[in-house]
Length: 111
Length: 117
Image (cartoon, rainbow over all chains, first blue to last red):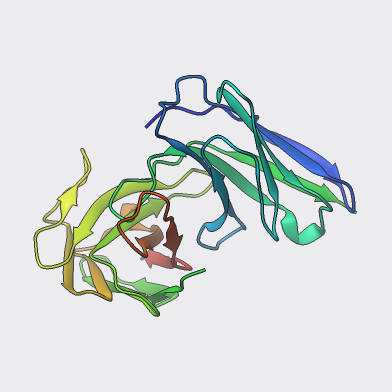
């Protein structure tokens, strides 16, 4: 799996958009960009994933650059409950491939 | 998304005893499940891949005789920490995917906090 690089931590004001960057310059053509988050002392929660096109669901939006070397996860209106470690993972997808976690970004939403 | 459960949520045991942790896929079948370990302030570390009906495959550095994995059905995988010691105290998390499609994803259980005294 391609290695990803994320900032160690970020702050965001409650109610504002949180934009979490991720670099994955060595991603291969059939690797997806996956985002998970982990709230303290819980299991990781799936957020969103994409291959080439931008994606949006009820939780977030994923913007992938045209060259696929970087992406941004956007939480449109951050709340205190969004405080968590966010993991960006380049992953082939599927139920049998391994998900390898990096260090992630600790997002602290401030009141 | 699909639901994965773990039992127990937390367990405290004495050094030298064995502890079994269950991972269940509640609304889907999973031929493959994964087990992770997470120490405080660290990321998740993949320990092993649990395969239904066959032996688990372990990541480098993980002792297979210490961390016994059994995947006896399509909805249940168990991790047994044998002869547990304080250094085995950790947060253990399992995951499972809902299908073999490359567009599918994996879902995680809530984790089991193991404390070895």
